[in-house]
Structures are given as structure tokens and as C-alpha cells.
Amino acid sequence: MEEKSVRGEGTTLGDIFRVIFSQKWLALILAAVLTAVCVVGLYFGYNKSKKYYSVSFELELAGSENSEQHVHKYPDGNTFNYRNIISYDNMQNVKNGDSSFAGVNINGLAENGCISITRSITQLTENSYETVYTISAKADKFPDGVVARNFLTALAAMPDRYLATMDIDYNVYLTTSENAIDYRTEIGDLLKQANYLSEQYDKLIKTYGDVTVNDGKTLTSYKQKIASYVDDGKVLSNLLTVAEEGLYLKSESLKEKYRFDLTQLEFDLTKAEKTLQNLLHSDDTSGSASNALVIKEQSDLVEDLKRDKTLYQSYIDRGITGAAIPESFLTSLDEAHKTVTAYTEEFKQVTGTVYSKSSSVIFTSANVISTSGGMGLTMIVILSLAFGIIVSFIVSYIVGYCLAKRHGKKAKLPEHAQDVQPTEQVESPFTEQ
Image (cartoon, rainbow, N blue to C red; front, side, top):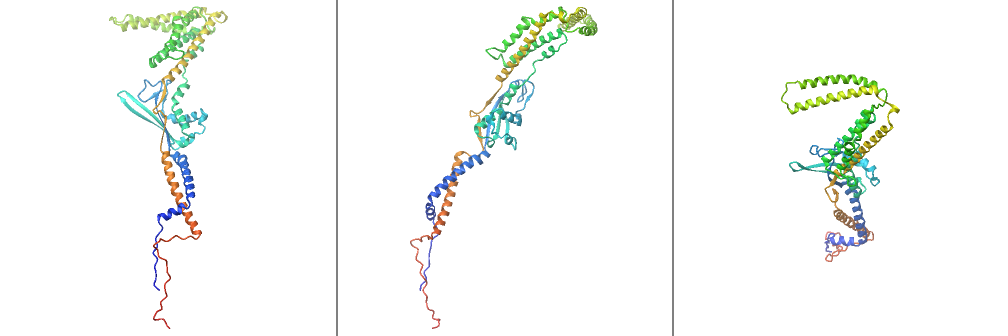
């Protein structure tokens, strides 16, 4: 018989899609599930580990107006270092100060450079600069973007918190006044404290202007209250005069002290008088203003020493102590302490308000926070959908192919393919009969 050969074709693309289509529901379900899983995994897993939150801001800090360019100093004299904004202590303080930050992983932020701060300085004019600070932190250390924004802005506000808690000792002369061993020093230090406060108000006005503080009151109005008490009312000056003229002593032991002081005072007086005589009889006859000023100052010193000598001698001879001191004087002295102390506490509150008004954190973006790194949600969806479709097609084809094979189905031959015929047996002439 004549041999017939078979000419077959390979699997076509149509055959593949027919197999996949036979498992269309499996393909749809797999595509949907895989896409969803990939979106969630990429967005909350991979994407979050690669994403950073950033906050950029400018800083205006009270007390830095006259310091070197880009160097901030607090009113208490301490230098502000911008790197301290992301210090572990500051992060811990911010977290402890707000329960909404409980989920912030500050230990993770502090490790492996997961948070950083940079400073960018741009010269605008010859004497004008713009300084922008940027805090960047890994997104996976925060529960969400809202918490990240609030936490990073709270970190940036560190200078304001420092100013609010800054404790400057303005009781310069109050302490010495309270510990004075005699009334003369006690009242004199109260007067020095009042004058010191007046000078501090002048400095604030010179630096920040006549700022309105509370209830429409300006710095000048607060200063004027002290001036009315010290200069117009002369309360402290009059109280000092009463103490000296009355020869009031805090204790009898002061008389012995004044005897030793009187010895030194007499020595100083003799020396001062000799110096004055030398100035008066010097060869300088030019009559210059500076020479006249020196002579006047020396003359005033001599007069003060003479007065102190007389006063010390009077204290020794006729000074009174204890119950002999009028109660009215002691009451007035106590009221003077309360008044000057109240002025000092008021000044502390005023400075706090002025510093808070003169310090600010200005964010450079309306949204405050920005993100970088990772992939956008649209890209994540596209990649996840492509992955889901490809994998679902592969799985569906494999399942369809296996099911068809299990049920004994054969692939159809193409229409032009010929049937396979058995080969005819032809007797060989050499076959034995």
C-alpha cells in the first residue's frame, strides 16, 4: 500500500484564548483578587517604605535680630542650632505632649537616617538672605499622612516652645535686696531693680518697636508705670531718706561693722581729697571740657565720702533698732518690695508675649506637607492590573489545558489535514514462497 504522511499545525493564539475563555470566570476572579492584593501590598507595603514626608519652613526667631547672619540666638543668650529640631529629646517631648502621636515610631525615626533636616540659604540682596529649613522623614514611621504633618510641624515649632518655657532671671537686684543686712542697701537695691526694668523696656522698644501687649497696653505704658512710681512718686527715694534720717538699723551688731567701715572710709576720703587737690593745681590751664568733667566727678566723690562718713558716725552714735523703728516705716518697706516684685513679674509676662509675637514658623507650602519617593496610586493600579491579568491568563490556561487532558479531549486538526492511513503490505519478490 502507498504510505500517507500527516501534516499538522502547532498551537495557535486562538487555541490559547479558547482554552482561557473556557475558564473565563476563574480568570476574572483571579484578575480581580490579584489586582486588589497587589494594590494593597504596593501602596501600604513597598510604597510606604520608599515614601518620604517633607515639611519646609522659614524661621523668625526673637533675639536674633542683631546676631551674625544665619546664626540665631535666644534672648537668654543660648545659640539656636537647627539640628536640635530633630533631636531625639525634641521628638520625645513632642510625642509625649499629644496623645495623637502615640503611633509615631520615634525610635525608628532616630535610626538609620529615617529623619533629616537641611538648611538652604539664598542671598536675595547684598544684606538680605532667605533661609529655608526642610524636615524629611520616612512615611512608614507614621500611622498616616495627617499624623505625619502634625508631628513634623510640631517639631518645627521647637524654638517657640523654648521661648515659652525660657526662664530668664530678671530678679537681678530683688534677691540682694531681700538679703541685705541694712535698710540702706535694701532700699537702694529695690531702686536699682526698678531702674533695671525700665532699661529693659527701652531695649524691647528699640528692638521690636512699641508693641501692643495686653488689653491695648503698649510697652511704653508699662514702662511709664514704673517711672511714675520711681521718678514721679519718688516712693523709694523718700523711703531711703526716712531710713537714713531716722538712723534705722536692722541689728545692733551693725554698729560694730560701721566702725570698721568708717576706718576704710576715712582712708578713701583722704586719698580722694588729695587727688582732687592735684587736679585743681595741675598745670592744665586749657579749661577743656574733659578736664572740667574729671574735676567735677572727683569733687562729687569727695562729697559723697564726706556724707557717708557723717552718716556712719551717726549710725554708731545714735542708731536705733528693734521696736524703736516705727511700724509705718516697716509697712511701707514691705509694700515697696511687693510693688517692685509685681513690676518684675509683669515684665516677665510682657517679654513672653513680645517674644511670641516676634517669633514665627512660616511654612513654604500651602499644604504644609509634601511627599516624595514611591509610586503614585495610578501607576500602582496600572501595574497591579497588568500583573493580575497576566497571571490569571496563565493560571486559567493551565487549568483549562489540564481539565481537557483529563477528560480525554483531543485537539482538532485543521480542515486541510489528511487522515492517517495504514501502510499497505507489499509482498517482496524475494519473499520465500
